[in-house]
Image 1 (cartoon, rainbow, N blue to C red):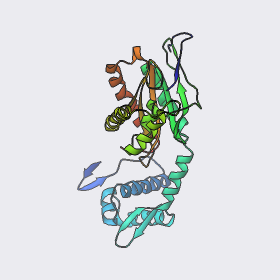
Image 2 (image 1 turned 60 degrees about the horizontal axis):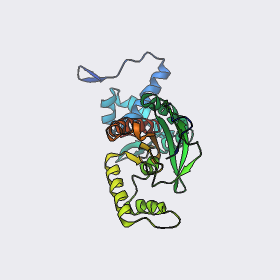
Image 3 (image 1 turned 90 degrees about the vertical axis):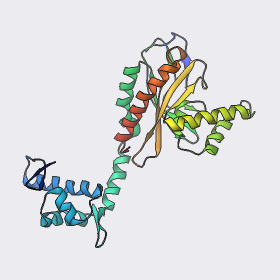
Image 4 (image 1 turned 45 degrees about the horizontal axis):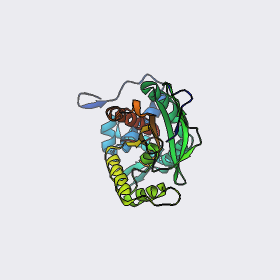
Length: 275
């Protein structure tokens, strides 16, 4: 985590006659066709893959359903196998990757960070794992009478920061241990006891999906952090709430964990993740 500036100690479906009725659409014929095509895509994504089942689910005739699905196959939005039915096609994958590239993490997350900072009155930060260390991508200052002295672009050790621990929660214990082994000062290795205590905390954090900084990065500084996942479910970033120990007693940290985790989930969903 970051230093605390003491300059001023901080503040800052219906069914009718046995048929499934689609929601009424007040649109032109072209728009209706588009909406029905999207219904086909969503139904197939949901596991309805054969023509008869699609027709029943959508409330459209087999002829109409086949026409829509065939057009989507022609445009590579769907695949079709004679015995396997329909499946999502490669064009959707291409568009998905493009959407991900065009959706910068910081841009997606920032409004969520601002709201979290307003609710907690504490400093909120966003970071990623970059070359084995935490790289800070965004920061929203708190409203208390002290300043968390950190800057976008700062790089900090994984083992000591809440962001760092949250970023590696999905990793295996040997990888956790390798990060902790970097905590030695002057080339000295940390004690076996300290290493075991840190690993025990990491196991607990992995169970809850929230990580803490308990003054490991700086005296009196504590934080609560949670991972952010992309559409594939991989951890791609983390966010944290930081404050001094006075405002981060154990009871409050447990309460903050709920809000921090909920915010991380909201950002993850904006990136395409489905819990």
